Length: 208
Image (cartoon, rainbow, N blue to C red; front, top):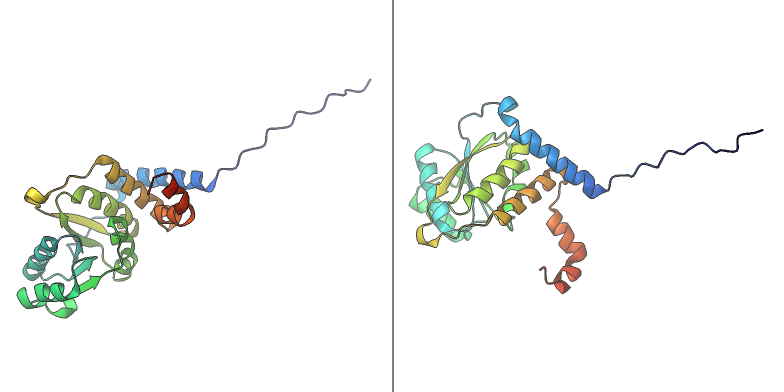
């Protein structure tokens, strides 16, 4: 008598979605970053000053540092060119070739993503990061993820904001940190990607 039982089939494996791979990659990147103390090489002395735009006091602080230390300056998304040229060249006496004004950035993440590959090509491995004290936690988290992925070390130089300080919530700080990690993994800002494809839905849902 023949055995009519059919062999059991192995259940099909579920394929991981692209978003799942991105999240897995972000977690892996975070673990690598947390272990950097074991393998990260000692950076050279600071090679430049990176200023994040948003407050003229940041540029004034960077101009004084540049005059004292002789370092070049890159301003990402700063004040208008007329004011910046007056501040750096006329008031502080820096030669034009030592100051680069870049206006590609739209927010904290793009402050870094718009510049980081240019800095790597220029063999920058250590930069002073200048921004306001109430912005530094978020800027440093994003910067150390994005710039760190290119082997660039950042040393913070916080500019006091006094009565004008507006402390940033942890949700905003860590949200931008996740965006930065996903940018390193995917090469793009997924918030911009979502707004391009889901903008009308987000607007109707009241999320924009």
